[in-house]
Image (tube, rainbow, N blue to C red; front, side, top):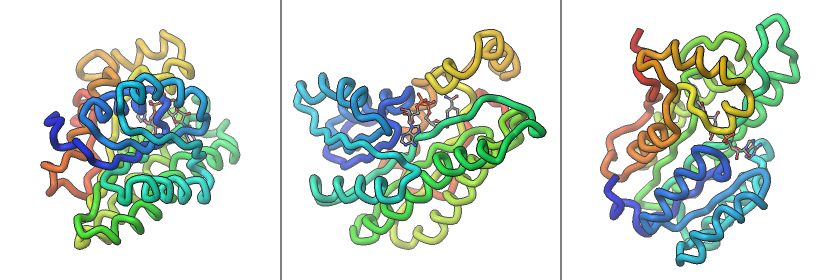
Length: 253
Ligand SMILES: NC(=O)c1ccc[n+]([C@@H]2O[C@H](COP(=O)([O-])OP(=O)(O)OC[C@H]3O[C@@H](n4cnc5c(N)ncnc54)[C@H](O)[C@@H]3O)[C@@H](O)[C@H]2O)c1
């Protein structure tokens, strides 16, 4: 990563207290970005952000439940009030309900997955793009989908459906706003041992998933985050409307 590219850039991240979120914050804080960080629970995010603030990093934190439109709108307003613009947004917040077969999946599983994983991204795009349309330089948005947004994911029906929707919404937004210099892409990672995976799956399940990967291992969170940073880097200014798998080759089969 060319850290100079991100110096002074205003970057908004949802789910910033999570596994990928914290690694993103570290990279961008070290690069001199101005950060707007949010998560559904503010306390752990503030604890995490404190050492960066103490080092002089410019960070604003705000509680934001991405399934609530007013929260997402307010988050973008905070970015603009504080910094006057929004250069990059990473809609990273997400959740997964416990693994279960399709015939045991309840309507409530679909509701929560769509509320957080799909509507959370949609609300983000709506207000981030409205702001970016006011900026002559446009902006860049990355939505965190999943490999489950590109293909079937046994025992993850609700998550898989919600992440497929993220890919569709991302591509649609990319086409609608490309002429305004707004880039929208989605990243589609394979399983990676963040709390989303380690809290929801025992080690034998993680071992099975590692075995099923062409590289015979899960992706390290840092490897996924490296690809996220690449996708939002200003030098990748022609990368638009893509759903990129970062999966050790799994989707090449
Ligand atoms: N880890 C993986 O294997 C993997 C694979 C593919 C995609 N993803 C996606 O990556 C993204 C980041 O997940 P992670 O792996 O870092 O997991 P994580 O559980 O460590 O982080 C997710 C973060 O999102 C926050 N969040 C959950 N619901 C929220 C809501 N309603 N509003 C605001 N914040 C909310 C959580 O508090 C948490 O901090 C998610 O969208 C996830 O679906 C993860």
